[in-house]
Length: 98
Image 1 (cartoon, rainbow, N blue to C red):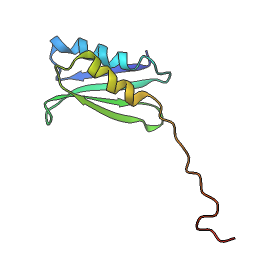
Image 2 (cartoon, rainbow, N blue to C red):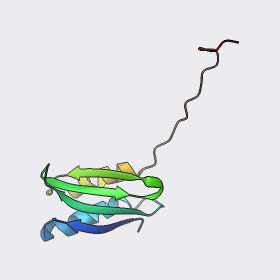
Image 3 (cartoon, one colour):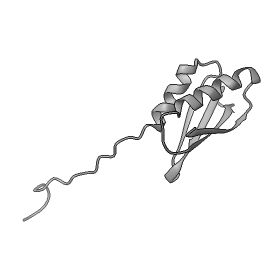
């Protein structure tokens, strides 16, 4: 499994299995190995998932403890989808004297 949940802190046992399954489902489509840590977010009253991976990748996703599984899976999947990097192409003739 490409997304491995290493630790869960402060999540009630009755909701932990559902949240972990939803986070892992969000990472099924990726090829590289990523790690996730799930903790309660005391400042916002919900759950925070921190995802780390290759090349210094690090993202955090927050959601409510009682959130639906689909609403947990979607943001995890969104942050793990590679975004195309478009290089800045210089425009010839603007600002240059020839």
